[in-house]
Every structure is written in structure tokens, then in C-alpha cells.
Image 1 (spheres, rainbow, N blue to C red):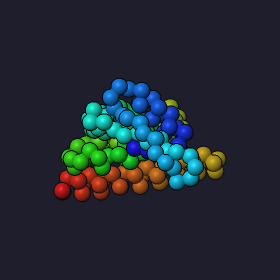
Image 2 (image 1 turned 135 degrees about the vertical axis):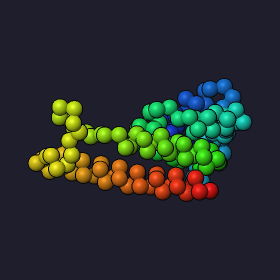
Image 3 (image 1 turned 45 degrees about the vertical axis):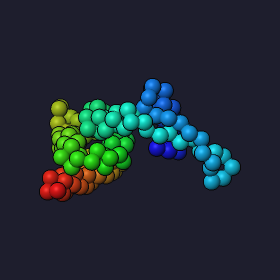
Length: 145
């Protein structure tokens, strides 16, 4: 596992402090600066697989954290376990949701005259529909495997 960005670097620094999950190596870089590489230990791999198998709720509901789960979900290996994680995200995405609510009712893009709020909801709806379609197709492929 290579920590290439500041945020990933911060996360890697936090997890590398946890005893026995990672080891750190310094390797020559392609330019002058050396690379700091973090390598999962056997205990670290076990913990990664546990977190992929049973992600905290925030890793299901927060898009950026969800993308982290997706980036590593292939390492889980078992298609049934992968599908179970996708089903959790699907359940979240199919709940009524909106950035804007009125009297307990989610507002849709058509409810706004403001082109910017309309745009926000139009883009969010298209993104959600695309993700829902992809998740359903992927679950079907995983359960047919």
C-alpha cells in the first residue's frame, strides 16, 4: 500500500501507529525523493478484510469513504461477501433522500425555480441512478458466479 496523497498519508500515519498492522519501508523514488511504502502485516490484512466485510455505517453512507471501500473490495475475494457490502450501499441509496426537504417530504429538482438547486438535484439524482444500476448489475454478476 503506497500513501501518495496528503489525506491518505495522514490516514496511513494513523494506522501505522496501530501495533502490528503495517510496516514502513523507505524505497528509492523515481525522482530524487525516496518513497515511504506501508506494507500490511498478516494481522493488518486480517483487519483490512474485516473492515471490508463489515464496514462502519459511515463507510456506506459517505461517498468519499464508500469509494475507499470500493477501491479495496476486490481483496475480499468472496463474491457473496462482496455482494453483501453492495447490498448495504444499495439499501442506503434507495431510501428517500434529498438535499432539501419540506414538511418531511424530500424535494425534487422539479420543485425548484432556482436553476442552481435544480442543477444540484438533477446531477445528484443522475449520479444515484447510475450507481444504483451499477450496484444491481454487479450484485447479479457476483451472485451468478
